[in-house]
Amino acid sequence: MFTIVNRETCISCGACGASAPDIFEYCDEGLSFVTLDDNEGTAEVPEEFEDDVEDACDGCPTDSIKISDSPFDGDPEKFE
Ligand code: F3S
Image 1 (spheres, helix red, strand yellow):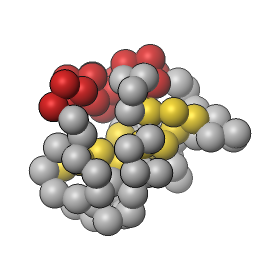
Image 2: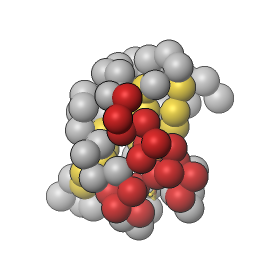
Image 3: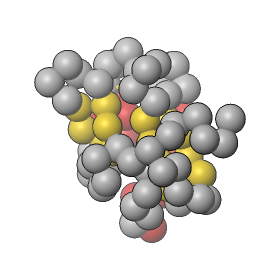
Image 4: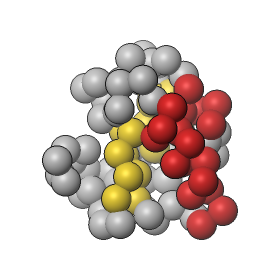
C-alpha cells in the first residue's frame, strides 16, 4: 500500500493524524503530509499501519488521502 495527501484539498481538519498518528503529521500551516516519504507516496506503508491508513482515508472529509497499490511519485491525482 502507498498513500499520499492531496495538500491542495486538505482543510487541516486533523482527523487523519488521529486515525494514523504514525503516518500523518502536519506542517506549520496545519496541512497533512505522509511522514514516510515527505508526502511523495513512494514508500510502502508498513503492514501494521495499513488499517489506520484505511481509517484515515475513510474519515477525511475532503477525500484528500489517496491510497494505491502503486507508488504515486509525488502526484496525488496520478490515479484519478
Ligand atoms: Fe487534511 Fe483530510 Fe487529514 S482534510 S488534515 S487530509 S483528514
